[in-house]
Image (cartoon, rainbow, N blue to C red; front, side, top):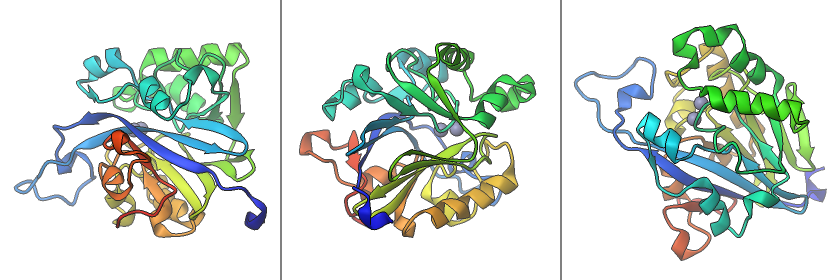
Length: 270
Ligand SMILES: [Zn+2]
Ligand SMILES: [Zn+2]
């Protein structure tokens, strides 16, 4: 069936960074407290472009949120999209992997888009789990309420498990990191690629089966590491959600976009 599909182009836009982060903050257990080197974390949104249109995966956060969370914006999301000749106002479909502040902000950037979200993520972000400070910490109430408003505007498409968004483009519930996290599977010239988002923050989380500490269900997170690899044609085709290595492994589509945009459906350097 895949033979008849038209491949999509896939891009990562690095819009922000958290420089002052240690290795011990990125893994549950298994680290030596005397040897805790820096391990910065990058923030991305992704673009999937092909014969069935242009799809944005996650909406990032804005300057106000960056200031509140002490993160550094490198290139605002809207600007990053325009560097790829994409007008945010023209986008019809935004896939939200989960509602954490770094994936579901910039609430007015896509005025005409339909948002794709798992049932369980809305349940998680509006239900009893948010009574616990440790579980709600990575959510911003304005992002969640903005999504509720979009529901009432008829702009949210809910998914329950696996859904095809377009031919060669599907979402898959994984859970683990949050109750309703979904990953995105895309047909590309390199075969099936998976945008894992926070199913695995770094390559090391999924490749070494070491869970990231922000987690709803550790067992589901560990299963998710294996699941995303099963969805992809090869190991390299799984793209983690926050790893600075992504911009080292993949080249920019044009020289002036180096450090901001990487083309993911091209062959990685390593
Ligand atoms: Zn997250
Ligand atoms: Zn994240």
